[in-house]
Image 1 (tube, rainbow, N blue to C red):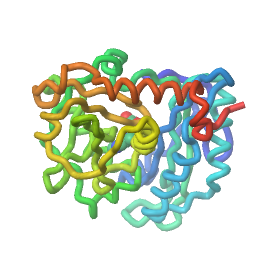
Image 2: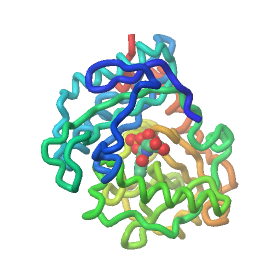
Image 3: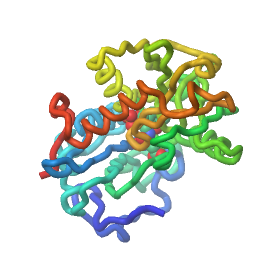
Image 4: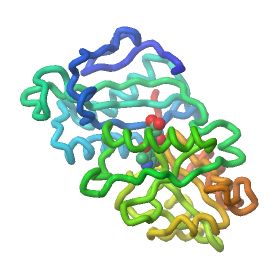
Length: 305
Ligand code: PPE
């Protein structure tokens, strides 16, 4: 169950959590065209700070651009609204969910004149794949479902309806006794998790999926930069599932999932079956950065107060 907070921002004003409602004929609810973001705010010695706020809001606007949704606010207004939402709810660490959706008006696939609505909620959300998963790694299964073709899902958009594919993959993985799904692309190469990007490590070099069928993850981008600064090279190239079976380390990245080690794929133990050395190093640095304990990445933090 979600950890309720006090207020939700809706189209420029705050409403009480329990009153943040939409009409049942809200267009996005029926047809899935809406864009959303997942952002995290961490407590730091200088108070709560949002990680890479600008980049997340920029991606929200890019998602809207791809799908011709005209957001009736500026990026700056949305950035400020995110900060206000955290402030008004008086929370130190939270997950923030901005959503752009097509409101009530016409039905049918062409929502002529329906308003474009925006809401922002924030609530405390712990380790997405469990505390133990974060520390020791999770068990993953290659999904029997595949990521949609790049001309079905234009993957630079973070679009509500895309997550039907993720949900069925996740459900299958959990029903089969795993923690998470790994989806392949339409050519059979590794794509990403249901809500995470993937990295593997082989002989000290990182490899991650190129930006074709995957979401352009902000955590992925951060890890590539941090790895570079630590002298670890990253290759962005396609790879197959058996390359994951044989790698030394693997991990997922995402705002919700943070840096979650993968200890098993399809019952093949990865490395020593626990979080690998490079994974731990990157994870440790990531948490230092988001918690405001690494000066070199200050520009990635937006302080709430
Ligand atoms: N791929 C997908 C499909 C995805 O949904 C996410 C984020 C990522 C990669 C990683 O992107 P980034 O957060 O920018 O590093 N998934 C979001 C939704 C999770 C949910 O269950 O809801 C998230 O992590 O916020």
